[in-house]
Length: 395
Image 1: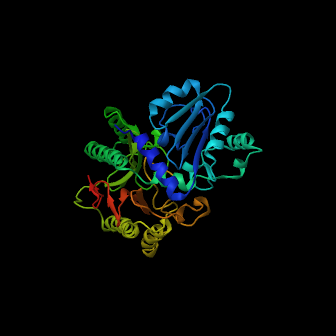
Image 2: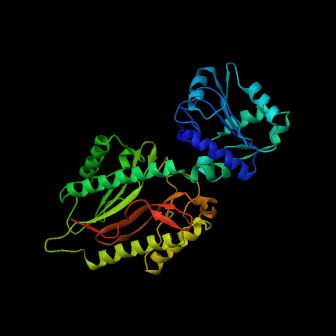
Image 3: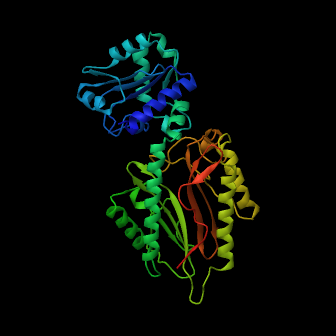
């Protein structure tokens, strides 16, 4: 039976051919302290305790040069045909393999923009160069960014199924939370209930536990990555959620909206409904543009224009990010051309990538209206992973 790690390593080998890169070299040490973020994708969560090198060659050959104490674990991964155990150091073995393979281009994990492709620390880069000094290989090093962007971004059918399962769990927890919440409770009360749902289902939070979920009740709640507060839920206020789960190593990331009806109200005030509809319109504007071949900048521009054309200030974050093993999974983003994002908004959208689409507005006197949906890029467009929120939840 092919494991997910084996599946991703085979995918990496195909990408090497596509990108015309001879060899991908993942160089690490003591990964429990300073792990390369791509390691769980191509090796698993097992710890490498000494200097180690994982090599993937365009020919299809895969090699793990590891400490002897890690050799059996590396064999059990089943993705590396040749496991070379070593004791005093790996340099002689690494140089021997490089001389045998004689790659013209050696990709290493450095990147100016993509956090998933920048796992090689400065010290380890210096050490690698020192190992390769006086060899032709030191001048053949290049960035593995395009390999990692493709590998981590293009989700396999197995990965898509795992993300979908995380999304399904998230929807169920949201429904249980709607049934639980009522005026007078605090944001922390609601957060505690959702945390208990995670525990009952043996799930993890998709990001920092204290801030997952974010629960924002009314206009005075700090929206963003702040933890829930003692602010109480009040009738006539909006309640905004940002929440995701990690299930079997893959994440969801979904925002939802609730309005607490005042006595005598059977629907939200017109300004609240109009604000919700505007956010929905912007989400759909992004979805119309989101398909293979466009840039994330184009998607962001379409959504952002809906908000600003309606007279609201632009939101101060990207319209979306990739989703996978992490809620923020690196790679290209659906974002503006801001310095902080580097070249990521210019990356081309590809089939089988999974993105969030998220944005919002602040509504005076009521609170924040923010929605976030998880979508899969398909051959000709995209599809929601689960039902989007098209109506305010009224309680």
